[in-house]
Image (cartoon, rainbow over the protein chains, first blue to last red):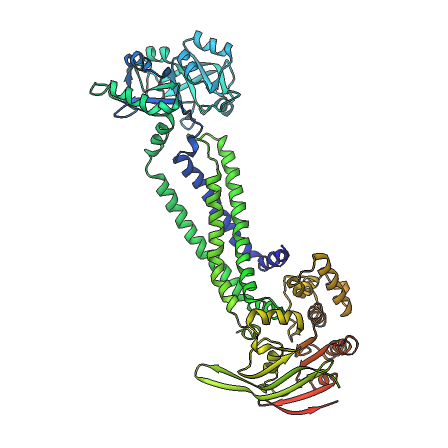
Length: 387
Length: 229
């Protein structure tokens, strides 16, 4: 610590250059924080809070192919299945196409029984069951649009027209669901309408639902139950694919492509540039103060001591830029959590921080080592004479 | 009779640049007594600074023995030599060689970073050294806020702060006007007379050499003559 004032003063010897290098590092680590957090989401980190005891049964071909509701009794009868909900993606927009958020047509009783990590006040649950045009929304979604119970919500479905050919649907918001005291509800950005009303009013597709959501008693039996369900419908016109909700969500995201590869390639390019930039800055900074380094050696600093000082300066620069960049990334992720985005909330978890810290130390060492070695090998006589 | 703090025996130094070898010092013998103030004089290229560098442990002789403060320093390895310099020698350069981003106080504290002294003790000793050179009130100023004379005083304080036996001064007044140079030389004389510091100073300036107790003239890498002013 006693060398810190010397390191700090040396770091700010050329303020403009240090600021510019710091900005580059901050930008690089801001990007690293955001992209690695996104990567973590795509690799399962963002769906950790999805229920381990929820299975999704979809059509084997694709979840866009509906399954008939007549499969319901057979699925319900599978041992270990506690409750079954079914849902059809509605695909509507609110007032403006940019106001897109997930809406699903569900059966209220089944939804309430299956999605127990979300809670809806009893009177609102009753209101939902009693009115066919009733809908409920997650607290996050309601806050996003400033909705309150009693509001009439117009939605234009991109998929399902009404029987009169119009796409303008209207629903009455009767309830706002929230986390339970014990669990975090991962559906707070969703809206749920009643399946019976939707199915009767839609122009086509009656009697079908996109997916079945099964609550099972024992998560350890998820694979066996899924296999049993899929075997039941094997070689039928409605072959199924059953997987955990987490796996289902990850597969959904993975349809976008090998995002990990894309994100890591971007980061690789960014850090290669940062290495060159910061490396050049550090080399220049050390080259400029050759006489000062020679003076330090004259005063009794050893070759190793001078090597350590230059590496420490490089690490300090990278840690400073890295920590500020990661701090900004966290702030941006915090802001994004309240923004209208269609993905699980981004969060820099321990894994992302580990990557970021390793990158800070890695870049610091890589860019600091060449000038540090030069400083270490510097002859005092040559250094003092400016050679 | 004083004990010799610096003993050079048959010291030669040859520099090789490409295919050319230049013998800068030729089998030189020299003793500097403890408490002496020696001025090394001579034309450019006579080997004054090379000799100073050898005495200060900044460079190694090609041949010969360099015994300073009782240590055969030409035999010391790099890290041991660095520790020896920190303990035994204070350096004053022509162009002060202060760290431009540090205050006078922090510049003076630099050699003490290599000790186990606490931060407060380092600060206290630096303050004393600055007081000795008459610059206590400028402690917070950076080198670019000081005049040449003041900067050289800070450099002298830095050289003194670790209480070395020997002060090595390479043209300490070469960048100063006459009046300021006299002040700096007066200060060095005080350090020699009142604080018992042994000083070896390289200078071109005969007036500066008059402040020394001995003058040694060099020419073409050898001692030409020795004078007592």
